[in-house]
Picture 1 (cartoon, rainbow, N blue to C red):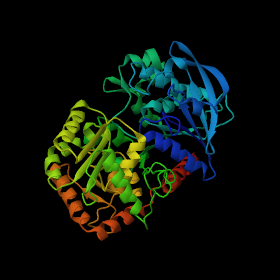
Picture 2: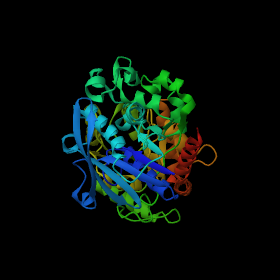
Picture 3: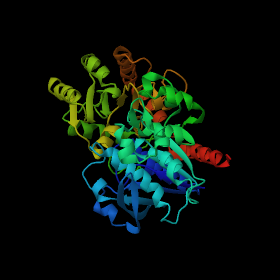
Picture 4: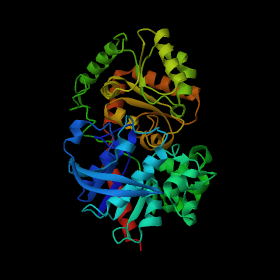
Length: 474
């Protein structure tokens, strides 16, 4: 079985969010199961010289994009047994940052068509192209409109994964003719509610549609979650499947992680206590081992449930807890959390921005990890926190619902609440505070969380089963 995974980011080369973790880890998990899986990415200017050093150019060609005829180079390298292709065009990709540019519609239309054009110039003929999010959503459409006549493309199947439907690649209708170059009869593929919508094209044209958790697949049938695409998704639900993401359990291993102050295991949690003390010192908190330390590592945006945290913050602090946060985003949230650090000196530590090493010190050093999300397609932070013996408090939505089971039931590994309500969130935190007061019970809970298997093995087998079924279809 030969799989080409097309994505706009992947670790270790370039990362802005969870998609990079998925692309880097899933490809390796599939490759480790004796299947041919390769990855194709844009060659961004932000990819380090160190990572570029192992790349070699293997092809050059032109890409037709409406009236444009653009250069594309293909570079190749191998990382942990997986071959990566990088598509080079300095005009589109040699700049600081990945997304948010005025010409994103053109940049990722180019990337999508270049992925298909590349197949004429490399020694790999994929049976399936697995596309991810709006940046690669045009691949199934371009394949059907321009490439099915080619012998190299004729029998290719496509899988499209929605990682976050909030970002759909929506642009003005002029993009269809001026950039995409679709003939008049095919323009309906990307037209949706008066706009050009890249994700809509993939939903319609892909052979199989997946999301990053079973619960999120169900939620996308609901207008509240689907951001305007619920009608289309309801029509295509027969080809939709939810597969929960995983994490790289070798990378996230408290027993060996060099980023931690002190390593530890489920059988010896003393190192976690050392991590907590070091984090308290780093974030300017009082070094009280008996103070419940709550942490968040998050983008400061509305759907992360931060309005609940705002509403309940003073009452949460009344329980004597400490709080640390790492994140950046909307200015009103940044301002609020900066103000909390001034209001609660020695008890609240805030770092606005992103620091991956600090994020790991938070995962390992806090007692409780807070994720009260309004929506969460999958979420990896709750899995990482449990891997480090830190107990999550989550709202039961999306992948949080599929990965966290409340300690009030069987085989608990965290704390959950259902309704999007600050008082319900606060009651759940209070339950955790009560449990924390019993050190033996808390240690038992931490060991239960650390014993969960969120590795990519299960997810990879589900994807392989899906690929196999797809290739068996006539």
